Length: 103
Image 1 (cartoon, rainbow, N blue to C red):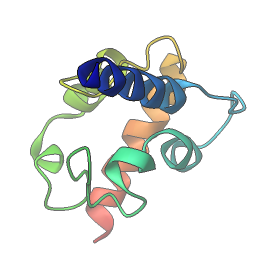
Image 2: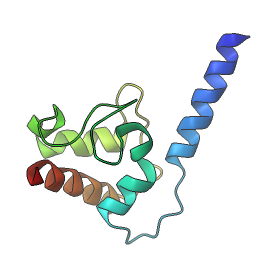
Image 3: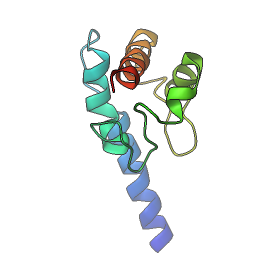
């Protein structure tokens, strides 16, 4: 019974994290703040999910890696394929890359 409760909580959390009422033209930062900070923190330092800022493992990966991970998910990270458009995913990836270079 305890395992079922944990699964339900995780599914609820992922469902909430993946739902979006963002405008189509939301900036990468706005999308990140709405959908990503819960796991990766507002300052990209990580938490439930890995750090994404300057000096992180993601900073050493090619841009295609970020795009693929956001689109398809990886490990515990859900796919955002059905939540975000390709353009929105690109804006998030661009935002992350810009933030990685700003520190």
